[in-house]
Amino acid sequence: MRLAPRTTVPVLTGLIVLLSLGACSSTGTTPSSTPGGTIAVVASTNVWGDVAQSIGGNAVTVTSIISDPNADPHSYEANAQTELAISKAAVVIENGGGYDDFVGTMIAASGTKATVVDAVTVSGKTAVDGQLNEHVWYDFPSVDKVATAIAKALSTVDPSRADTFSANAAAFTEKVAGLQQQLDAVKAAHAGAGVAITEPVPVYLLDAAGLVDKTPTGFSSAVEAQSDVPPRGHAADPRAVQPARRRRPGVQRAGRRAPDHCGARRRHQRGDPGRPGDRDPAAGEGLRLVDVREHRRSRIGAREVTRETTSSLATDAEAPVLELEAAGLAFGDRTVWSGIDLAVAPGEFLAVLGPNGSGKTSLLRVLLGLQQLSTGRLRVLGDTPGKRCCAIGYVPQQRLVDPITPVRPRDLVRMGIDGHRWGLAGLRHRRETRRRVDELLDAVGASEYADVPVGLLSGGEQQRVRIAQALATDPAVLLCDEPLLSLDLGHQRQVVDLIDDRRRSHGTAVVFVTHEINPVLPVVDRVLYVAPAGHAIGRPDDVLTSDTLTRLYGTPVDALRVHDRIVIVGGSNETHHHIERLPR
Image (cartoon, rainbow, N blue to C red):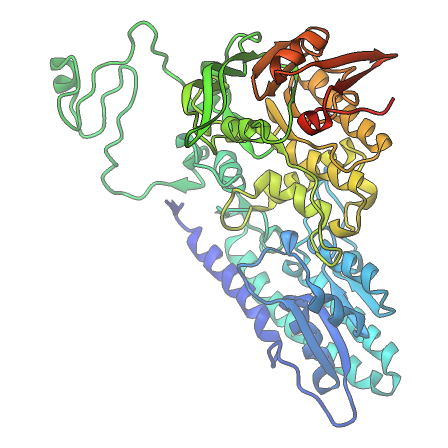
């Protein structure tokens, strides 16, 4: 697409002004030093690192944590080297406003006593209609304020050079004033001109230039969400954006509209497409003409579906989310299980029990589409396994995490939301992702330690985080692989309550593999028990009986009720050491 007449010059001029801001610094991010020692300065990005270098000159050594223009500060994962640099810094410069939260985390972890300059706080910018534009380096008055704050911070560290820092700051702001004059000239010549931008980052700059953002809402939303731009999204406001004058692509259209590159006469002569360019009318029964103006998106975690496609995919609320018919699994000549006929309903809690090696985890792998059935048929949410993976949450077994691992709960949950995406996310998407991460952590009671390295958390705390990650896509099915393993009774109860609350409030079906039935017994609807001699499916009271378990194990087994608990007692420890043995 191209901009409307007389809007190209303001945009290009604005970009030149923007790029020239980086030229305010006569040196790059590579610091110089003096024999007398320098002040260590750490900046979250080289935007503020360059400003600090201009003001500090030879008196500072500047380390810019992020200098790659393709890096996303919102999702940057700090490392030990970053923490070490901050711990030794005398001055730390962060953008603030949620742009580079990792800096605050590293400051807290390192225990540094450095003077911290927060650019957003210094700028005085606040949220408008609940939204804060943290890109304050596009606002020249804010840049001046930050430069003054940096000079003051450096003077506090080394008062003997205060005059030099003040003079350098004055020279820097004078250069910024020159850029402001260029911006004023743009405003004088093009005030009120419409411009189109891909995301609302340089809004401060556009406002100062008197330019009007006429980007179609559908276009901006699609770019932010990293999805296809809806057809009408290119030209929601024809005054802002006009298509280039060239032959249109040969896209087939539905309904009684003539297809591209095809005359109406030829269209009506043919009742069926016989070659590219032909298409018969799509107005017959059962075929709907969807107006793209009604194209709205419902966001469900990392998934995005249109209301139109949702209606076409919707099924009866009672339709099974998982269906196995005569399902069997074998590895070579060894049959793990066979002949399983099972339908799991929305909101149902199914416990999968059995000794080690009976194929419980393998069943989850089959449901995830990672392992194929040897015999039989499986449908997951009405589709083949692996096709609806975004609608399935997975809680893995408890595993130890190295205490020095820098990954935080916040990072793990975010990977559950957009870990499948490539490239950088748009501003609006990043804000939505941060909000969603906070909601998920709060829902499982993990907000308090959201920024603590995962390796320092207890087993119960780690499982809470894994559940939050599994719920990130708002799954219709939640698969849990022994999530209670190695947890004490208190933490087991907490994990079970979280999962049970989820399935009751959202209708999420739960398939829960476990060795211990008692922690989940109060919430279980049915049990699938797989054992050497077969399997059994039914209510706990019907499956966990002496007769049924004796049949499944091929040897006498007693199932006893002790208050609200079930105790399984085998006749031979050597034969039955895998059977659940619960405290009396």
